[in-house]
Length: 206
Length: 274
Image 1 (cartoon, rainbow over the protein chains, first blue to last red):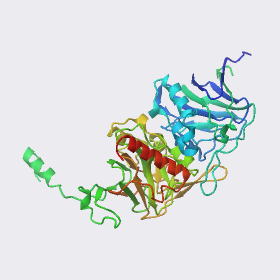
Image 2: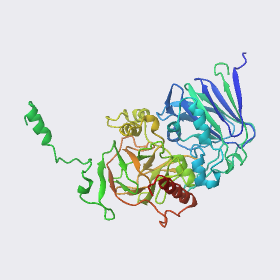
Image 3: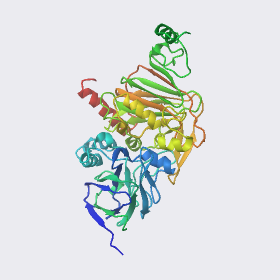
């Protein structure tokens, strides 16, 4: 039996991360301390105009929560990644990323100087030639966003805990951008950003 | 008519002027036969065929009324700030900031810059969707046998691409869209329920809060369970109006909305436009 080839990175609280995950490889996202929102975008690595589509993923699976078996579809309705394991239970497709701009609406203009996910996505994406036009509604792993009967929706206390994991299989060569959410004004991370761990495992030896 | 000569072909082509089709723009818009009572002079008047698209630049303050003429229209909508398309509709911010997944009267369509693109000033449908986006070539080919723009079952994304390209934009500029007149509801477990149309005659009026580029695709909702591609004409009428200002009930309807209007006004003030 061969030892799986693994690359593990710890993403500090509030930081960005990115990687190319080759087709067939597994990406494991570990919520080290619990209740941390991991904002996540994924692109076809060979054609980044083909990228994660929240609406295609939502109507493709008939629901807004992600868990084991969910297929992350692109804007061309092609599979980018599949959730092959999930010890948390459900994850958000609706809330998108925090930004300095939206924070002024959600909390007030005093939040302008705070860190936000869109800045992480922009800075990390720029390394691959991506810009603002390439940012779309993203996944928030471990973030809990229920919708009430009247449509009331909000980010509430997380249902994650230390050590929970999501495992994604790349269905094609993909580029993954992560913003380990720096939000300190809502319960997406218990008002206290903490590190997460990203592990890429060679699918052939996993 | 003889069309074997240039003169004959020219006469044949010119003889078509004045022909009427069910789906067509009326130019000038003021020639539209029955303008809404509340409207000022129309600035855009068009009937969009099922399975087709349209696009227009609209001035700030313009009111845009969409009407589902026969009950099976679905207006997929994207908004960009005219001449600055890097500010555009952000569906996630639209639902998150307003603490509600459903669209309707009083809701604001927010940009990715903490500002308002358009506000919903009237709605007699109540069947709308901010979650499922539009249809794609892959899905329409699987469902209906084809999804290309010239086919009998064009996909919304394919039509959006054409509308975008005509406005100097590219496919990568297309974010998730909104859809009006075909509804979706979310169950407690997150599952979607397609609620369909409110029926013929429902209308929705948007007010442009910035100068906008508007892209509209009129195609079936992607969650429409019917096996046939069902898409009927959409009426589009727009008239000159005034952007939301302090004192308007919408300005103070929520703290988040007030700050969005304040940001929008601040932006126009800085540009010397307010």
